Amino acid sequence: MNSILEHVSLKPYNTFGIDAHARYLAEFSTPDELAALLSWGSRSAPKAEGRQGTDVWPVLVLGGGSNILFTRDVDGLVLRNRIEGIDLIDEDEDYVYVQVGAGESWHGFVEHCLARDWAGVENLSLIPGSVGAAPMQNIGAYGVEIKDVFQELQAWSYADGRIYTFSLNDCAFGYRESVFKRQYRGEFVILTVTFRLPKKPVLHTEYGAIREELERMGVREPGIRDVSKAVIAIRRGRLPDPAEIGNAGSFFKNPTVPDEQFEALQAEFPEIVGYRNTGTDTTKIAAGWMIEQCGLKGYRHGDAGVHARQALVLVNYGGATGREIYELSEEIVVSVRQKFGVDLEREVNVF
Ligand SMILES: Cc1cc2nc3c(=O)[nH]c(=O)nc-3n(C[C@H](O)[C@H](O)[C@H](O)COP(=O)(O)OP(=O)(O)OC[C@H]3O[C@@H](n4cnc5c(N)ncnc54)[C@H](O)[C@@H]3O)c2cc1C
Image (cartoon, rainbow, N blue to C red):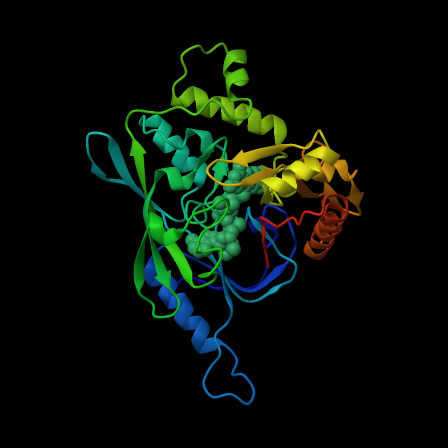
């Protein structure tokens, strides 16, 4: 069986750089290795007092640790997913079907696609983390989400140790949402994800500053590699690099409110930034704008702070604990609620 380390700092394994500890840490590269580790976890866990049988160690599967905030130690088993492989498994006139191991890096997969002229993921360039965590919150950027290129995934069930296939419908993807983040939270380990990628690209350059960036680059007739380069340039200019300052990207989701509520807010705050959700009577409000209006952009409490250029991103200046970052996020929630009457929801997974 793979080696199991004891009492390990998780600081290198989460992009917030929080120094939480795992009681046990191990890696798996195949479903069999995962099963062996879980079986070890249930054999070696202490017996709960006054109860029959054996408890299992709590298990946390980790990819790149770029969407998690540790507010405490993990008194259990942290398993790093290292399942590899990017395989072209099928092809028709319009699409290629590519199955990817959950432990592959997301951006590595994007680069693999770009090199082969497989379209569809270029707008998702440079999102940190693993392929296996991408369906968890239906990662998205610049007008594209993985649901747009998703075919199916395979996931291992903790309940019965069997592998299940989830179709697009089964995953119930929404804005930074899926069944894995809601009703099946903690019940499955995603092993592989299969993508359906168009051979003829349909470019999405209308979002963010992609067009302006392409113009700046002097590109008149862009292809997928140009769009990827533009997205990378924009992201590098706007988002703090976790290698330099701890963060997990957007900490909050942009809240959705009924159009009526948005119009009332607009009457009071004419500058408010919102985007109509087409086909619904709701509007998505830019959470970063509201945080900024609360005077919190660049706010710092100890080593926990709100990024100076991007108010949606909370940062660890070095020695912040997860608890301190969480408390700062709570302050932000309260301020936004008081000023706008809107509840912010955390996008980051809080452990
Ligand atoms: C600088 C920066 C920019 C970002 N930009 C974006 C962006 O533009 N769009 C966006 O959507 N996100 C963005 N993110 C968030 C993050 O990159 C994504 O959510 C990413 O998919 C997380 O992958 P991960 O492997 O690091 O997940 P982790 O942080 O390791 O895990 C996240 C959650 O998923 C669970 N999990 C991980 N792997 C599996 C698995 N195989 N099976 C079951 N559960 C699993 C974990 O237990 C945890 O609850 C950004 C983050 C950073 C730091």
